[in-house]
Amino acid sequence: MTPQEAQKKLQELRTELNQARTDYYTKDAPVLEDYVYDQKYQTLLQLEQQFPQLVTADSPSQLVGAKPLAEFTKVHHQVAMLSMGDVFSLAELQEFDQRVQKSLGQPVEYSVELKIDGLALSLVYQQGKLVQASTRGDGTIGEDVTRNVLTIANVPRKLPEPLDLEVRGECYMPKAAFTQLNAQQEKAGKVSFANPRNAAAGSLRQLDAQVTAQRQLSTFIYTVMQPEALQVTTQAQALAKMAAWHFSVNPERLVSSDLTEIIRFIEKAQTDRDQLAYGIDGVVLKVNPLSLQAKLGNTVKVPRWEIAYKFPPEEVETVVRDIEWTV
Ligand code: NAD
Image (cartoon, rainbow, N blue to C red; front, side, top):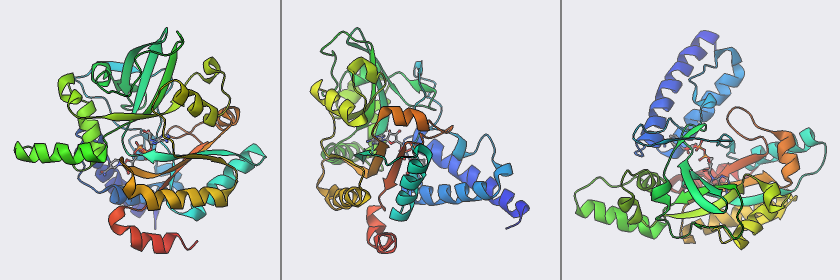
């Protein structure tokens, strides 16, 4: 492909993907299927890698989420809420592991977790009291959804100790609540939601907290921003501590440096995903020691110390699986 052809193709992809991002993040009403978005995004990344001089500031590769809705009070995140790199095959997962080991010059242990299909949430506690909840927004500025989050039953209002602490996690809508909500929407002649992720986003980002209260939202917490305050030095310890402090922490997790064992966990998660009460779209590997995470740092968009292995979409799963899982 010539640079001129690449430029034209990139322009097309940017326009199409940015429109899809508005539909997905701003309107909570996606038009493209996620796997179609992901394929087009991968094409964009590959072209940008081939022609780095053609990367523009408005490329989806440089952007996290979308600007907050004007109706909400804005929250400036102390530390940016980033996106996450993803891979679609075991070969790419191995490459990630090799890249991490090479950068660190040592074998690495991972905290392996389910990738919950919801939207990112930040919870800020002052003196042990929940004072602010916000969405990711564009990574730097999110939407204040404190009143809405106070309607979610499994979010602790108080910590056992009077600490200043921020935790982050995923707000999601359980599958049963989603089915019920769409039935109600239909009955009321309203538009139904495309999937539980969009239903969760649409329900959390409500101006009237009473609407949110009826939507049966839930959370899984997976990050603590001040690990030193909790005296933890690994991601796994942080998860255990947050569970002990009555946050909802997903129980399906593994700590391992053995890729074969990690792949078994991924296969099992993929087989079991239908039985879960909530949606997952992959498995996340995070470098377990927090000091090594800090060493690896972030790009403008994603941490270098974590990766999502994305599952093939359920409807095309058998086809993709046959191709991908032979590597
Ligand atoms: P992402 O959703 O792929 O991954 C990052 C997010 O994963 C984090 O922000 C966090 O909220 C979440 N997460 C869930 N479980 C986690 C765990 N255990 N640990 C850490 N984080 C966890 O990234 P993104 O940038 O928000 O969105 C990109 C994805 O959104 C695309 O891959 C695509 O599937 C979808 N998308 C779809 C469309 C569309 O038109 N259908 C448009 C835009 C984006």
